[in-house]
Image 1 (cartoon, rainbow, N blue to C red):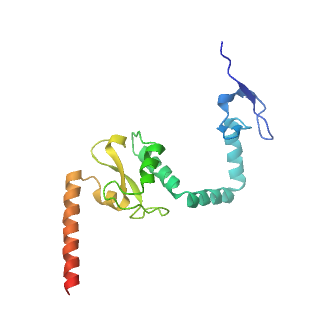
Image 2: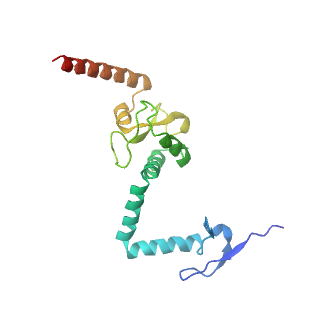
Image 3: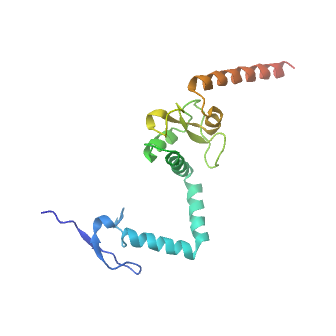
Length: 175
Protein backbone atom coordinates (compact mmCIF):
# COMPACT_ATOMS: atom_id res chain seq x y z
CA UNK A 1 0.00 0.00 0.00
CA UNK A 2 1.39 3.39 -1.03
CA UNK A 3 0.63 6.35 1.23
CA UNK A 4 1.14 9.86 -0.13
CA UNK A 5 3.17 12.18 2.10
CA UNK A 6 1.31 15.05 3.76
CA UNK A 7 2.23 18.51 4.96
CA UNK A 8 0.65 21.17 7.17
CA UNK A 9 -0.34 24.37 5.39
CA UNK A 10 1.08 26.69 8.01
CA UNK A 11 2.27 30.21 8.45
CA UNK A 12 0.29 33.34 9.21
CA UNK A 13 -1.92 33.06 6.12
CA UNK A 14 -2.18 29.26 5.85
CA UNK A 15 -5.41 27.31 6.12
CA UNK A 16 -3.98 25.03 8.83
CA UNK A 17 -5.05 21.84 7.02
CA UNK A 18 -2.90 18.76 6.60
CA UNK A 19 -2.82 18.17 2.85
CA UNK A 20 -1.03 15.86 0.38
CA UNK A 21 2.33 17.29 -0.69
CA UNK A 22 1.00 17.40 -4.26
CA UNK A 23 -1.02 20.46 -3.09
CA UNK A 24 2.23 22.37 -2.41
CA UNK A 25 4.66 23.93 -4.90
CA UNK A 26 8.15 22.45 -4.79
CA UNK A 27 10.98 25.02 -4.89
CA UNK A 28 14.78 24.85 -4.73
CA UNK A 29 14.60 24.77 -0.94
CA UNK A 30 11.76 22.26 -0.60
CA UNK A 31 7.98 22.50 -0.45
CA UNK A 32 6.33 25.90 0.10
CA UNK A 33 4.89 26.78 3.51
CA UNK A 34 1.45 27.42 2.00
CA UNK A 35 -0.68 25.14 -0.15
CA UNK A 36 -1.23 26.34 -3.72
CA UNK A 37 -4.72 27.64 -2.94
CA UNK A 38 -3.52 29.70 0.05
CA UNK A 39 -0.51 30.92 -1.94
CA UNK A 40 -2.83 32.18 -4.72
CA UNK A 41 -5.07 33.89 -2.14
CA UNK A 42 -2.04 35.54 -0.50
CA UNK A 43 -0.76 36.77 -3.89
CA UNK A 44 -4.16 38.23 -4.76
CA UNK A 45 -4.37 39.92 -1.37
CA UNK A 46 -0.85 41.42 -1.71
CA UNK A 47 -1.63 42.65 -5.22
CA UNK A 48 -4.94 44.23 -4.09
CA UNK A 49 -3.17 46.00 -1.21
CA UNK A 50 -0.38 47.41 -3.38
CA UNK A 51 -0.85 47.03 -7.17
CA UNK A 52 1.85 49.59 -8.05
CA UNK A 53 4.47 47.56 -6.19
CA UNK A 54 3.45 44.43 -8.13
CA UNK A 55 3.57 46.29 -11.47
CA UNK A 56 7.02 47.55 -10.54
CA UNK A 57 8.24 44.00 -9.91
CA UNK A 58 6.77 42.85 -13.22
CA UNK A 59 8.31 45.73 -15.19
CA UNK A 60 11.69 45.14 -13.58
CA UNK A 61 11.54 41.41 -14.36
CA UNK A 62 10.63 42.21 -17.99
CA UNK A 63 13.64 44.54 -18.27
CA UNK A 64 15.98 42.04 -16.61
CA UNK A 65 14.71 39.07 -18.68
CA UNK A 66 13.83 40.36 -22.17
CA UNK A 67 14.19 36.99 -23.90
CA UNK A 68 12.09 35.09 -21.35
CA UNK A 69 9.52 37.92 -21.42
CA UNK A 70 9.30 37.70 -25.21
CA UNK A 71 9.04 33.90 -25.03
CA UNK A 72 6.08 34.17 -22.64
CA UNK A 73 4.35 36.68 -24.93
CA UNK A 74 4.92 34.52 -28.01
CA UNK A 75 3.54 31.47 -26.23
CA UNK A 76 0.41 33.36 -25.14
CA UNK A 77 -0.14 34.66 -28.68
CA UNK A 78 0.20 31.20 -30.19
CA UNK A 79 -2.19 29.61 -27.70
CA UNK A 80 -4.75 32.42 -28.05
CA UNK A 81 -4.83 31.88 -31.82
CA UNK A 82 -6.22 28.34 -31.71
CA UNK A 83 -4.82 24.85 -31.26
CA UNK A 84 -1.12 24.87 -30.42
CA UNK A 85 1.55 22.45 -29.30
CA UNK A 86 4.17 25.19 -28.91
CA UNK A 87 5.74 25.34 -25.46
CA UNK A 88 8.31 27.59 -23.80
CA UNK A 89 11.14 25.11 -24.44
CA UNK A 90 10.44 25.17 -28.20
CA UNK A 91 10.36 29.00 -28.21
CA UNK A 92 13.43 29.42 -25.98
CA UNK A 93 15.44 27.03 -28.15
CA UNK A 94 14.83 29.34 -31.12
CA UNK A 95 15.26 32.60 -29.22
CA UNK A 96 18.56 31.35 -27.78
CA UNK A 97 19.86 31.06 -31.35
CA UNK A 98 19.20 34.80 -31.56
CA UNK A 99 18.54 34.93 -35.31
CA UNK A 100 15.58 34.86 -37.69
CA UNK A 101 14.95 31.41 -39.18
CA UNK A 102 14.12 33.02 -42.55
CA UNK A 103 16.75 35.75 -42.97
CA UNK A 104 19.48 34.92 -40.44
CA UNK A 105 19.27 38.50 -39.09
CA UNK A 106 19.71 38.92 -35.31
CA UNK A 107 16.62 39.62 -33.19
CA UNK A 108 16.08 42.85 -31.27
CA UNK A 109 14.75 42.34 -27.73
CA UNK A 110 13.20 44.66 -25.18
CA UNK A 111 10.73 46.52 -27.41
CA UNK A 112 7.29 45.22 -28.32
CA UNK A 113 6.42 45.33 -32.02
CA UNK A 114 9.97 46.25 -33.03
CA UNK A 115 10.53 45.36 -36.71
CA UNK A 116 13.55 43.30 -35.66
CA UNK A 117 11.75 41.51 -32.83
CA UNK A 118 10.93 37.79 -32.97
CA UNK A 119 7.52 36.55 -34.12
CA UNK A 120 6.05 33.07 -34.60
CA UNK A 121 5.32 32.44 -38.27
CA UNK A 122 3.01 29.72 -39.55
CA UNK A 123 4.86 28.48 -42.62
CA UNK A 124 1.61 27.30 -44.23
CA UNK A 125 -0.96 29.87 -43.09
CA UNK A 126 -3.84 27.70 -44.35
CA UNK A 127 -3.17 25.17 -41.57
CA UNK A 128 -5.09 25.90 -38.35
CA UNK A 129 -3.35 26.81 -35.11
CA UNK A 130 0.32 26.94 -34.26
CA UNK A 131 1.86 23.47 -34.47
CA UNK A 132 5.63 23.01 -34.07
CA UNK A 133 6.05 21.28 -37.43
CA UNK A 134 4.43 24.25 -39.22
CA UNK A 135 6.03 27.13 -37.31
CA UNK A 136 9.30 28.99 -37.06
CA UNK A 137 10.48 32.17 -35.34
CA UNK A 138 11.23 35.00 -37.77
CA UNK A 139 11.55 38.79 -37.67
CA UNK A 140 8.30 40.55 -36.80
CA UNK A 141 8.59 42.76 -39.92
CA UNK A 142 8.87 39.69 -42.18
CA UNK A 143 5.94 37.95 -40.53
CA UNK A 144 3.84 41.10 -40.75
CA UNK A 145 4.78 41.49 -44.43
CA UNK A 146 4.08 37.83 -45.20
CA UNK A 147 0.58 37.86 -43.72
CA UNK A 148 -1.28 34.86 -45.11
CA UNK A 149 0.79 34.55 -48.30
CA UNK A 150 2.24 31.19 -49.26
CA UNK A 151 5.98 30.64 -48.88
CA UNK A 152 6.42 30.78 -52.68
CA UNK A 153 4.58 34.10 -53.08
CA UNK A 154 6.43 35.52 -50.07
CA UNK A 155 9.84 34.52 -51.48
CA UNK A 156 8.90 35.93 -54.90
CA UNK A 157 8.05 39.33 -53.41
CA UNK A 158 11.15 39.37 -51.22
CA UNK A 159 13.29 38.81 -54.32
CA UNK A 160 11.46 41.57 -56.24
CA UNK A 161 11.81 44.03 -53.37
CA UNK A 162 15.47 43.15 -52.83
CA UNK A 163 16.26 43.59 -56.54
CA UNK A 164 14.43 46.94 -56.67
CA UNK A 165 16.26 48.12 -53.54
CA UNK A 166 19.68 47.17 -54.95
CA UNK A 167 18.86 48.85 -58.28
CA UNK A 168 17.76 52.06 -56.53
CA UNK A 169 20.81 52.04 -54.26
CA UNK A 170 23.14 51.63 -57.28
CA UNK A 171 21.44 54.52 -59.04
CA UNK A 172 21.93 56.73 -55.95
CA UNK A 173 25.62 55.82 -55.79
CA UNK A 174 26.13 56.78 -59.46
CA UNK A 175 24.63 60.25 -58.91
